[in-house]
Amino acid sequence: MQRKYIAKIFVTLRPSVLDPAGVAVQSGLRQLGYDNVEQVRIGKYIELTLICPNETKARNSLNKMCEQMLANTVIENYRFELIEVESQTGVF
Amino acid sequence: MQRKYIAKIFVTLRPSVLDPAGVAVQSGLRQLGYDNVEQVRIGKYIELTLICPNETKARNSLNKMCEQMLANTVIENYRFELIEVESQTGVF
Image 1 (cartoon, chains in turn green, blue):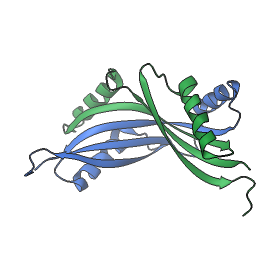
Image 2 (image 1 turned 180 degrees about the horizontal axis):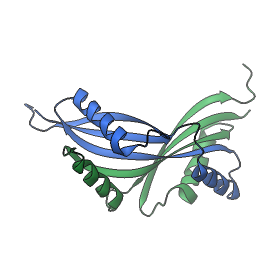
Image 3 (image 1 turned 30 degrees about the horizontal axis):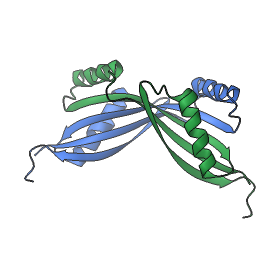
């Protein structure tokens, strides 16, 4: 039986890595009058649909995808949330 | 009294808008052997620290920031989560 999962993946710069885009956004917000914003960090948010037999395999697969392609682990961290949406060939 | 909030902002393309970057990532994953990935959508994830007197003002402020600058509401949706981290001049 195959299950369908939605994965929400967050790829963020490691805290020690400078984020010039974040600094630019903060400066832009300041110019618009938002001087109460202290720090801005910009990352990626990836949503994908995954077909897998179970959650463990889905998590393993996602970890590999992130390591191989979605995140640059030298400068980025990643984490993800997994939501099961429906069974493909369920008994229900 | 000022409070400190961390806002986690998700900016995603509206469902009706094509996402060529997402299609490219899906194709890349397929070439790496992940043929169980059905759809990939790529968005932005912005984390910022905000100083505000209360949560309502923080939410209003964030909505305005997103409308004015962080999201292009013609083609993008946004949502955010707000977490209070500490009081600036608290009584604790």
